[in-house]
Length: 173
Image (cartoon, rainbow, N blue to C red; front, side, top):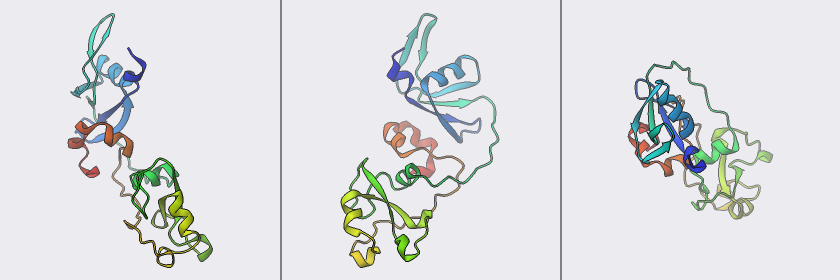
């Protein structure tokens, strides 16, 4: 098996077809082979091993139901970038080189919360400096908010890779 293929993401659905998590092809194939899951979507072809040909799954479904409590997501840099779809919230430019910006600056008693932090490109962050968006003349493209407690989400970078996941992830459209 080629290394890049076995490390591709696979969407794992619960028995009731609700998204549960994302794993790698290697783990998904093992789960299918031992009877813990079934392949729902095969958008990538087959891999050949000494014991036969196996589907390279894109989506698998567990044979049994996993009960999970949903926990609120932690506010991290990556979570903010995922929420903002890796785009500057002032100019709209998509980039991997982003910074975090406090909408209401900390020196003006701005809090470190989901509702006060946005992704910003370096030029926009420098231009805004320690001012509010109104003072800097830089309106936000979208008001920041805390993510909903949906129990599961797919990181933004995976959504662009796997269009066949869309029908299983209605909350990401």
